[in-house]
Structures are given as structure tokens and as C-alpha cells.
Amino acid sequence: MGSAIEVEGLGVRFRRGRRGPRSIKDLFGGAARRARPGEFWALRDVSFTVEQGEAIGVVGRNGQGKSTLLKLVAGVLLPDEGRVSVNGGVAPLIELTGGFVGDLTVRENVRLTAGLHGMSKAEIGRRYDEIIAFAELEDFQETPYKHLSNGMKVRLAFSVVSQLDEPILLVDEVLAVGDKAFREKCYRRIDALLADDRTLFFVSHNERDLRRFCTRGLYLDGGGLVLDGPIGEILDRYNADHTGQD
Amino acid sequence: MSGTTIGAPGSLRRYVHSLWLLSARDLRVRYATSFLGYLWSVLDPLVMSAIYWFVFTQVFHRKVGEEPYIVFLISALLPWVWFNSSVGDFTRAFRKDSRLIRSTAIPRSIWVTRVVLSKGIEFLCSLPVLVLFAVFSGAHVGWGLLWFPVAVVLQVVLLVGLGLLIAPLTVLYTDLERTTGLVLRALFYASPVIYGFANLPHPFQFLGLVNPLSGIFTLYRVGLFPDQWHVEPVLSSVVISFGVLALGVLVFRRLEPAVLKEL
Image (cartoon, rainbow over all chains, first blue to last red):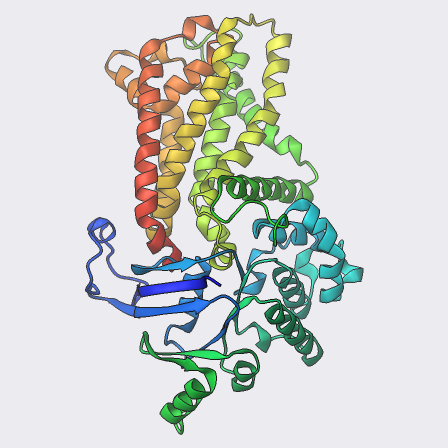
């Protein structure tokens, strides 16, 4: 079994304010290791390796770099330092409804989004009915996406992305949305994917979800990786650090 | 898990697949939301041609261009519309699809190339208009028509290069969006659309040489108007177009991380 995700000395910095002078020199200057004034490191010196089939939960308070880390792994953000190498494709359940187009119908959107994630036309044809059935949208296939309710949109998005045959699954807080029945369905889908030897990279504030799916945890604080160990240990440490603060 | 996905992530096959899907999406959205659909890609250059034809053949006594003037106009206006609408879209290329860019790892240059491709398809679809006018006005077609595809390729090179420059820069500097609009308006009159390269008066001939569009429009026109052939603008536009492309690739690579953070 090779490793699925390798992260080495990862660092990324953001600007503190939206405004402020940004000189051409800033953009083309060499990548200095110090943060420039007005910038901060959202993540710094983070290194870890994830083996194939592992289920990793990322724990930390808001603003400690969890989602940023997930985006770097998904490849929708590029690091300023270090590197991320991902072995195989990624099915990102991040900003779920991002790829959908309001003016196109549900059917066209499924084809487009699945296609952009690399699914072939024949494969989309084979899985189309299952995707629609999972999202419970049989009666809305020709409806423009913009006329769906918010719940329907999320259901459709989860259904499409979780059908992708990618070895790595990234999940960012999406399970907080949707009604209880659909959430249960999502859980079962993730369980099935895990049983199929997929790698899971999971960001959540929900301790129950973390314990349910994950075996190993990463504890992020202040943009750094504080602890890397079994999920139980990670959650205990996190709770010890933050009791009475939340 | 084999056979279910198209190419590996990052492979050329996957790139082309995604590029095609997004361009098809553009066209489909366009036709799904408007009744006139196809007509719009033709109407814009047609109305502009009618206006310039009226102004320069009926109002003013024109000393520029060639007969039939309406064909002379359309032969450069169609590629101009492709150029103009593409550059206009470059300024919004990332912002318009920011949600998709934030959630899906597609090679970022696709947001540029897909504008060039979908606008290019509209350009090709509008060519029958040029053919119709050429036939009905009795224009003579020569071997120079073989330069037409060369002009298309050269315009693609120039557009991709400009897109790789403009698209990331407008994300980082919002003012550039307005500036680009102004530059485009000036560029229209600085390019040989309503006149030919040879019509530029003495001290201004350099305009035709520093502007890569003049060489490209020359190549488009030479099939119908052999007298429009000039080597200098063509050579300079080849050099400039590839230069812009090289610069674009460089700048794009450099700015990509910063752009992703801003979206």
C-alpha cells in the first residue's frame, strides 16, 4: 500500500486585510520565508503522511487552518512553502454546490459536474439514474438548477461527488446540512466508501462524526500541526485545551 | 477503478475533456437563456458593419479600404468581435466561476482557454455571414484565402497569451477591468478594421507594426483583397503574438497562488 497523501513542510500565508497597497514587486519578489507586513501564516511547517485506506479527522477551533489544509490537499489552493503530493484523484466535498450552473437543468448539471471531475460520458450514463435516485430528484430532472430548494441542491451535489470513483474523499462540514434522514443516508454512503478502501480526509466540529468515521486525527492550532495520533487521543487533548473556552 | 475516468488528473486528455465541457456549457447557457441564440453572435458584427458602411460610404466620402467596402469591413469585424469579446471576458474569467474554481481542481489556465475556444466557435459560426456578403457583392476570391486558417491560429496564440496576462491581473487589481475596456475601445480605431494597413498616414505607420492585430487582419483579408498584403505587419504580429504568449505563461504561473487566495 503506497501513501495516499504526503504533506511536507507545508505553509501558506494570507493577507490580513483586503485593502492595502499591493505592489508589482510584491508579486514577483522571491518567496521569502518571512511573512511580509500585513500577512500572516494560515499554515506553517505542517508535515504528515496518510496511507491509503486511512480515515483522518482534522480537529481544531475555527480559523486554525483546517479548511485551508483541505483546500491545499484538494489542489484548489497552492502552497507558498513545502509541497502536497496526492496519489490518485480526489473527490472533494468542499463548497459542494460550487460547480453547478443555475440556468442549466438538473440533468445537464449532473453531466457537467461529473464530467469536470473526470467521469467519462459512458460512466455518467451508467450512474446517472443512481445519482438522481440518491438525491431523490426523480421529478426534477428537467428543472433549472436555480429553481431547486437549498436542500435539494446540497443533496444533488453530495450525490454527484460521492459517486466519483476517486481513491481519496475530502469532506468539509457538509454533513451539517440537510435533514436528518438525508444525513443518515450520507453517513451510510461514507461508510460504504470507507469499506471500499478509500482514504478519507474529514474536517468537522462534530465529535460524534469524527469518532464514527476516523481512526487517526490531526490537531491544528495556530496554523501548526500540534498533535498527530489516534482520534480518541486527539479529541481528548482538544477537549482538555478548550474546556470552558467555547 | 479503471475505465471510469477520463485520463489522469493533470493529463492532456483530461484537460481537453474539461475544456470541451466548459465551452459547451458556455454555448448551452447562451442558447438556453435567449430566444435569439445564434443570431446574437452574428447580429453584433452585422449592426456594426451596417453603421460603418452608412457612415463611410453614405455620409463621408471614403478614401480608405477597398470595394466592396461592406465585405472589407466584415472580413475584419468578425475577428475583431472575437478578439473584443474574449478580452472583455478575460477580465471576469476567474470571478465569474470563482465558486467552481474554489471547489474543483481543474487546471487554472482552462478559465482562459475556454473563453478563447467558446468565442472562437461563435466566430466560426458567424463566418457564413462573410461568405454571403462576399458572394452577393461579387467579390473575387484568391489563393490568399489559405492564409485565413493561419490568421485564426495566430489570433488564438495572441488571445491565449493576453488571457494568461489579463485574467489573473484583474483579480489582483480590480481597476484593470475598466482600463481594459478603454484600451479595447482605442485599439479598435488603432487597428485596420475600417481602413487598411496601407491607409495609415506617414507618422502613424508604426501603429500598424506594434499592433499585432494589424498583421492578423491582413491575413484574414488577403484572400478577398490581395492588395492588402504587406509583409511587415504580418511578421511583427507573429513575433509579438508568440512573445505575448511566452510572457503570459510566465506571469500566469507566478500569479496563480495569489489569485487562488483572492477568490
